[in-house]
Image 1 (cartoon, rainbow, N blue to C red):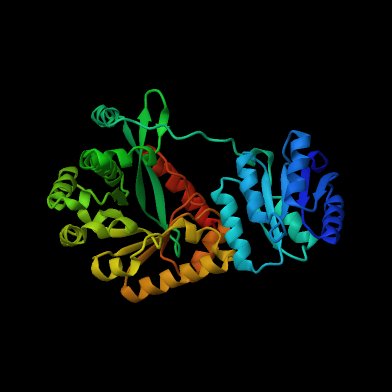
Image 2 (cartoon, one colour; image 1 turned 30 degrees about the horizontal axis):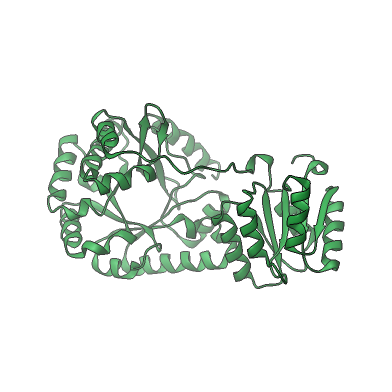
Length: 402
């Protein structure tokens, strides 16, 4: 870690005894530049006087006058770019909610501690902080006109990246998820959250989806010829499912590419299904009859998850990363993961955990008997040409215990 004596820490707590204890703990950990304040107002005045913000803030939640949540709002107004550790006598659920709020504000949350704060626990959280974690203030994302996107699709500026999906029990690579990007001639790589909405709004989504599927099927064919029979998943929009002809079109695409429909997974975001229930049910049923696999994506983030599982012919459920990463150490996430796994087992549906970011996530899912996983712990999205070499490297990791 960076030289601790060069790191400025602010401790904000209305209890003078806790301030002295915190100062002493930080001193023992090697922090010499420590500022203590007993109210949010005093802390803000001190920061204004300094003309700069601290690297780390140890923040009490429950204070009179200006509580910790209100102080967070002030940090947002200041575009605070350091790290925050929450400390409170409140219960773990409130602390977890507050930590989620910190991250929602775009501030680096290193974690939370229940009082009385223990030196080892404080040291462990502080060790997560790095100067590089500071976040620059981001302006509004650039918007694009429909005409630009139409030309981009026609000019083959959309490119696919592929993120591997593996069986947790064996480590075997079973498939990939296709993730489209726009290789913009001026702006570089543009991610789908900046152009999918435009495509849906301006009637371009069918055109875009069929280009993405066509390229993904061509890549799958290359892999088949190389001896890799990988399932290839492609995200489809609710707008795609409003077209009765969609199953026939994608069937023809698969046949033309020489890829079995059983190797193709169509992922539908669960929260967007309900508006066109009858048509969607018609289309999804026909897709299953044509032996495409169907996945309900981002499960748990919408408002009608159980109704979708009851009514729609899904054979795969993807648990959103917001419920997966950190579940090993989070009671609420753990409960949601367990409930999703139990429900899927009873319905005979396979489960894919998204957002597997570290070994703790992997071991948690393995111990729970989850079927499949994807996430940065396994691999980041990559060009199709890189997948065979990555598979060889992953096999070595599996051999060594991952």
